[in-house]
Length: 453
Image 1: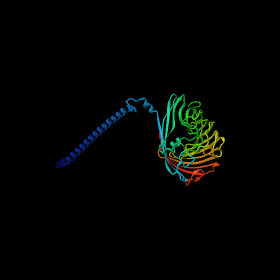
Image 2: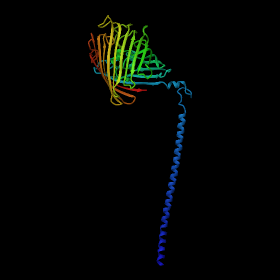
Image 3: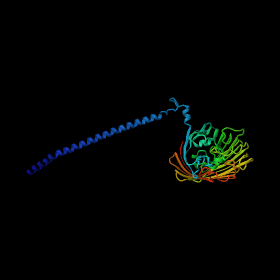
Image 4: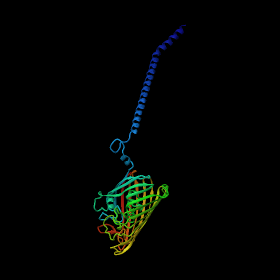
């Protein structure tokens, strides 16, 4: 009995000892549960607030979308002017270069005699800044227009004012015409670039920086008149046509009662692997002879009102995504030219010229590419380049291009030119001291262009 009493007393004592500890543990457990419950309540409140804020943002965004963009014209309602401006494309570019003639001529102005542009030596130059405003007449019944204005050194050369104005003065109207789509036949009325030739006026759209001999001497640059173009056999056809009646050879105003005619047949494969253009020009419009980009050469023949004819065939073949070839072949004749200087002095003869341009471009990556162009041009009567019999010009050009960004095109180019003429020898390029001449010219150019569209 006594032992049972003692055992019960011991158990009671142990219970009394551990009761405070149990109470504390229970209290701590209750405190933790309360804290967790409070945190869960707080998190729930924050989630509700985030949901409410997101709903407010979504409602505001939807409200902004439902409101019309403020009109360009005055007033709160969109006008016909706004609708028109939305259809006008604004494109263009700015191109600057550094040019160096390895003959190191004493006079840096007009140091290259066979280029249309890029004429000088050891100079930085603003080649061109161009603004293009274009509203296409895409569908039948649509009306449109094109206005291209070029500034800089190229504008002075094209306008014949290079020796009159500083490099940053002058503007050339490159294209200015009204367009109308009549049953998928596009009409242009005004001025536009010629349909002849492979290269175009804007250097940034050519494979090389400098323009070739055929562009400079074989063909005109622009025409003023009316042009029509379309597809043969429907809009999906690979064959097309174009025709025009114009004032003449670079003539903004007709100099006589005669008009020039242009006609073209073209082909473009559906996969863009091959394109080809055959173009003919016929005119009795007073063609005044050879090109003179520096305005320093004296005309030595009278303008003829007899017919002039130019035939041009050019095209492009893409062997694959990286390798492209192109060609341009031209032949021209000016009937009954009266020369009053040089080997043909006092003679009335038919002046004939012809040339060939072959080129290729290899695209290494989406940024790097290289192009090579070789040319030959024969001016049989000394009518297009310089006075003399069988004037021959030849050129080899290599160009390396790198796209610094999607808008900035950088290019470096080396060009070799040669020129010879019976009766005048073969030394035509300024070299060294004043008065020295060389039979060859080596030119280097670095060009940077920003192109926007």
